Length: 390
Image (cartoon, rainbow, N blue to C red; front, side, top):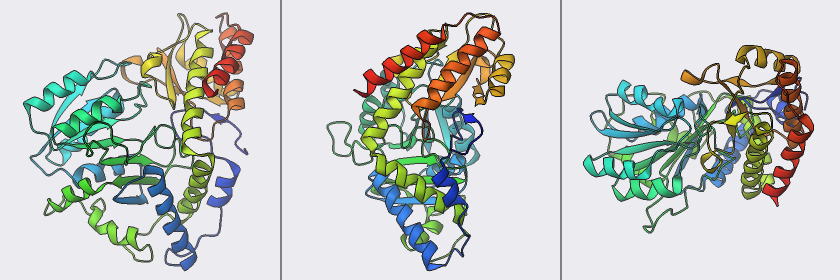
């Protein structure tokens, strides 16, 4: 990679040279048949990624735009949603829903823990909710949602399942054809994501998939409080990209085509296994330095980890020293700020990059007066990766 630094944050993630090359291709008209063909191809790639029986939408914007599209096209003002939150980014659905007159209830877990499915069932039995939002991998805590338990409960009570896949898509299984329970309708209805995390291209694309149930919910809303985010304005373009509603980000679509080629060429199952192995190995290696993951291994996401410092380490000093070695990690959020850092291990990140990061983290800890056994940590990383993959 031509990157000068290892960008090991929860996103954006490292970009490989072939994606940079695609991004730097000649900008063409959005109505040029050559570009239209590429747009059609990425739509098909996205359908293959999510395995949806409905429609996919790829538009200019961030994951926040995709969150907005998910809500305004399925939930009307005055209707209720339940937000299942396992961290900071689950909470973002609260102000978003309220901005559109949606009634919002929230079920929050302790940071580092999963929401208890029994609590979800209890709330769904008390009120009628139009939709329930789930953050698949919360970027603030490194906790993964228990879809196997949650999806059947939500569908049993007649609500839509809206899955925020921003920090999970293309790294953790997100299959809209999968039946999670005993009922054939126990499926995810909407998945939303962004381009800059496990897909591994630069920020700027909002990507969202609706199944037929979610599309039917849009039909039930006479008028949505949006223009750009109304999927009815985008549907003709997704079905025929030669048509026009708003100018697409031509060069980002080039990059997305290459990014999705790499994702599908690796194979989704192999990709999921690789991310799981990387996450386990990073957490195991860092534990040798006296660093502990906020999320227990049984609930940890494959894409990033929130790592708590050993006693006596100054957060700002640690991250600044690490950055001088070319490794960029993120600080923690909310009440964990200064007490932990967040490290991404997703997308185009390689085992060698993560090994190097483990070494530099150990060197930095030693420089700051905390004894770190780098050899032992590196051995732990390699052995854990090997065991997880095999």
